[in-house]
Image: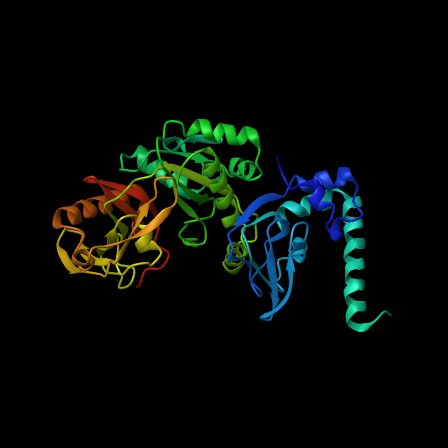
Length: 141
Length: 272
């Protein structure tokens, strides 16, 4: 199989508005990456190269040394790396052996640039996520 | 041009990366490099994406490399004089079987696309997409191995600086032991011998991977290279400089009395 499982990508909120054809296009540029239990997958503060979807296993997310949440199958992390290569905002470690599907900025960007529909839908998803997180922090405006 | 070639035929740096081309040149010039295969960045990308045709082609290409394999990164902009990525990319040893080989190539791809690799590239001013080739070689099971600089990188003196330990060279490269330290003049004069503390040796496991073997106490601080081997290394240094140019950082291994050259790259910082 080439790329990420469609059914996993379809559960990622960032890709919620994409149809199956658009999901398949994005799925082809994902690559499998495996981590052993205890591995640091991404480190807060380092440059960002890739966005990951968890295919199997469990990871834990720390921000400023404080545990925030655990992620499992179908969850994702590192999505800001798709847009810029700025510093990671969290540390993610494997709690078990983990299989992820990952995509780098370089592989994702051409798809968005070539397909304005995908780009627009992703923008809408990002805004929705942003509004949701801001409302959670400050209350709706 | 094919993008999966015998190592001896790797000549295009943009396609196969500088490590592959360097080793290919060494083979063409008669240096003792273990035989192998070079994969282009496009093939590595395809294998990492689990493209079945690419995986099949790679499996067929290594059919003559019997036994365990060493899988090494070979990026188009790695190991150049201006920006050596030594340590940023990956080497996997004792890879056995088609599935392990596919996974290993995928790991090499990710090593070039990891957060730390990208951060390093940004720091040295490389903002282009990494293209990572791969070198696959028959794994040498060494009795002793290590690194050799053809010029002293610390003092700039015109002498060979050699660090050696028992087993696979990873013990030296990864800093897992205090290696023996030798300085040999260009004329072959042994200027210095200093025993290290070699309490472990990295060895291959029968089914793949490596482990650390505890070294017998009487060998821990015993010099692991004799004068004859130092003379051979000095000759190898001279040959490397003839082929590649001055100021080389090399990795070598001695197995069953045979000296092998495993890597050769430019020294990026030499004291004035």
